[in-house]
Length: 88
Image (tube, rainbow, N blue to C red; front, top):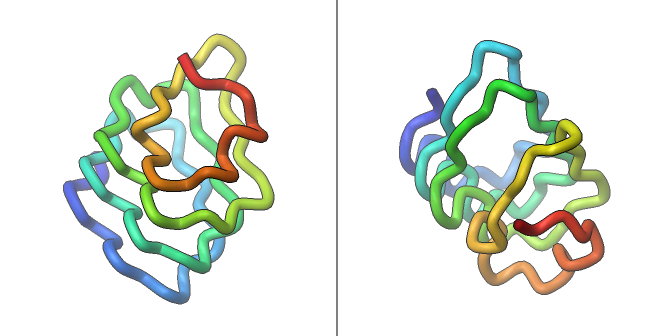
């Protein structure tokens, strides 16, 4: 588990690749991590907290396992996220 606001804010974090053992990402865990460019979700993540990646708006790559759904509020306030097209 990555806890609530664990990396909020962090201006130097640019890439996140989660281990296969991760099951939960807390509320606002990466909120305001404005340098974050790449996130790769693992298949064991079952819960992603509200606004976990809010106010980042700098992603160049977001990948997730096929069949995984992610609600739009995870990337709250990031208008550019519509380009990834995988909201539930």
